[in-house]
Structures are given as structure tokens and as C-alpha cells.
Amino acid sequence: MATAPPMPKSFEDAQLLHLQVEKELERICSAVHFRTSKRACEFLRYVVLVTLDGRLDSLKERSIGIDLLGRETSYDPSSDAVVRVRANDVRKRLSSYYASVDVASEIQINLPIGTYIPNFLPGAPVRDRIERDTAVTVEPKPQEAVPYPAPISNVTLMRPALLALLLCVLLMRHRLEDRESYLRFWDHILSGRNVLLLSIAPQDEAKLAPSLYPIAWIAGRYGVDTAIESSAHSEIRPEQFASVQASLSMPPVMARDRRLRWVFTERSGLEHIVDRAIRNPISTTNISSAALLTVLPEDTATLHIQGTDSEAIEHLLEELTSQKHFPEGIVDQSGSRRLLQVLQMRNATGQWQTQLFSGDLQ
Image 1 (tube, one colour):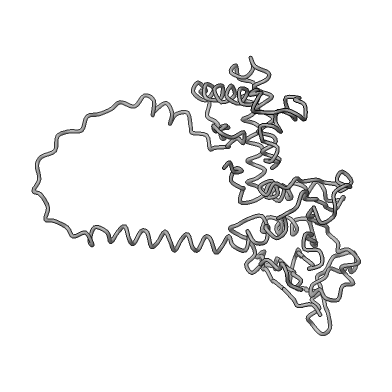
Image 2 (image 1 turned 90 degrees about the horizontal axis):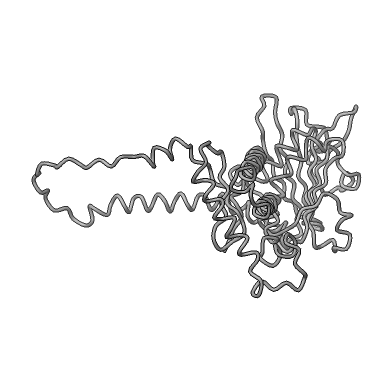
């Protein structure tokens, strides 16, 4: 079964990969192998850009025939092999291109047999390929006879292998435990959804928009389309789409919700975090910036993210989309009457600290 390309570890990696793939795509289409075939270039460009958008469900044979090649909705791939023929032609041209290219590529685009989802692989330096192709085989020199060693028991031989196996199991278990909260969290948010709505503060759209790219990437791996405005999906029922709302201010309705432990308030034109667990609520003063994630049980398909500044929101979004740095303690709250809040604060020394609050509702 075809899978999506590996998810970037951070929004910087995602942006870099996106730019590298687009750059390599233009290099390929301008090469003689594809310049002589407009159809092959259009096919490759389509499957690459759709993959980068995370819309993997669109890369089915019938969908490509209708969306790219203009076939009727009654198109039957079993009686019309135009998509398979076009894909095979692209594969041959890609193979010919990379066999003849003499300039190193940061990324190589590959279209595996049996799927229309391309792979983006690290490009091998040209000098390595040349050295490999021109390598001279050297016959080994004859070795002098040495005394045959004494027999070694099977247990002795197996000890290194068993130790290595044990280490691998422990390492795999550790990595699975690290990923469990991450996977359960996004399963809960995106499972069964059709659309992921991304909404950010208009005045900070240019700053925050790139930070949402990894979330769109995750949505694509779940087969969920992404959208910027809900107006384009007005016919979709609310329960069919998830949303991420990033803003520098907290919605008034949320600010009045007494169940929340941490809220944002504006004082003297600046945003402050208030901890309501303190008897006399006061703003946290030992932080330089902070971001807050709130997931309410009544609307667990919506992530409310607020911050004192766009950099704090960007950092929290990066944490949520990174398996390695996913905030510890976030779990699936499905089926329970509990709310979830995650507060990330950067202190005066520049260190980020994470606090988790999952409270019972009265």
C-alpha cells in the first residue's frame, strides 16, 4: 500500500523540502528528457504538487484520469489505460534523466511502480556516482594459511546477536512510546474528518501561515483536505471538518469560560497569561512570551491556539507537529468530560517550559 513521504520533523524542514522538490521539478521539466514531451511534464508536475499539498486521495488512477486528463466522470480505468501509459512514460524519462544528469541534486523525484505517489529521496552527489561507475575491481591478494581456531560454542556466537536484538527492542519500544501520544492526539482530531480548516489572525497571516504547513501535511496523511476559509466548504456539516485557529488574542467567549485554568487578557495594550488556579489571579510576570493550546470537550475537533506573539505561536505549532518534541502528557480525551490546556512559556533565559492541564468538568 502506498504511503505519503516521510513527514518533516519541523516547519523549517517542511518548507525546505517543499522548496527543494519544486526546484528539482523545474530542473527536470526543463531538461531535454521532458522538454520534448509536454504531456509527461504535466503528469509529473501534477502528481508532485498534489503530493506536496497532502491530497494523496487524489492520486488514484480514476481521479487522475478525470482531474488531469479530462476524462468523463464515467471513466473506467480497466478499459482505458491512458493513466498507466502516461505514468510508465514518466518513469522511463525520470530514469533516463537521472542516468545522464551531471549536476548534483539535493532531492531526487521518483515515481515507484504500482503507485502514482512520488517519492522524494536525498540526491546522491555526482562524484559518488562517477566513482561508483568508474571503480576498478582489485583482486584480493592470497592470504597465508593460518591455524584453524578452536571451535566456539553456539551460545558464545549468539551472545552479540542477542544483545543487539535486545537493544533494538528497547530502542523501538522507546520510540513507539514517544510516538503514542502524538499519534493518538492527531487520530482524535482528524479521524473521520473531510476538511481541515486553517484560520489565523489576519494581521499576522504572513508570519503564521508557513507554520501551518506541517499541520496541512499531517492532514494529508489522514486523507483530509485543507482549506483556508470555511466559505468554500459551506455544504459540509461542522462535524465533518476539524479546525486550527491561531490568533494573538483569545475569543471573548473563551475568556469568559470559568472552566479554563489559563486565559489571555489584555492590559496596557499587551497580552498577558492569567493563572486562575491562584486565589487572586495575577498575570505571569517571569516570562518573555507564551502560547496556549485549548481543546474543549464539546468541540474536540477544534484547536484554539493563542499567544503573546507570533513567535510563541509558531513554536507551539512546531511542537504539535513534531513526533520528537511533541508535548509530553497530551493524550486522547475522547469519550470523557475533560478539557485540555497546554501552556508553553519562554522565561527570561530563553528556555521554553511546558505545562499541561487536563481538568474534570462540573
